[in-house]
Length: 104
Image (cartoon, rainbow, N blue to C red):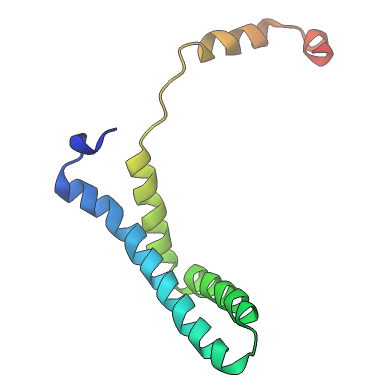
């Protein structure tokens, strides 16, 4: 799927949930990181704790936006192309006896 095949409104509606969720997570991280920098002397401890808190807050409180972002990403990706040989390979493996498959 090329960018030319997506119309502007359709492309924007597929990108918006992911962008919104990313900005919420980034904002949560920034706020928690800034607060923890005031408390902890080590920046890497503050960053690690802020990442964990940001993940938990995003997962627990923003589930609807996260699901919308995942569905939009799946819609942008589209369906995988069918492999023309997949049916032939499946039927061939179904015809082989179980003993032959265990030897391979």
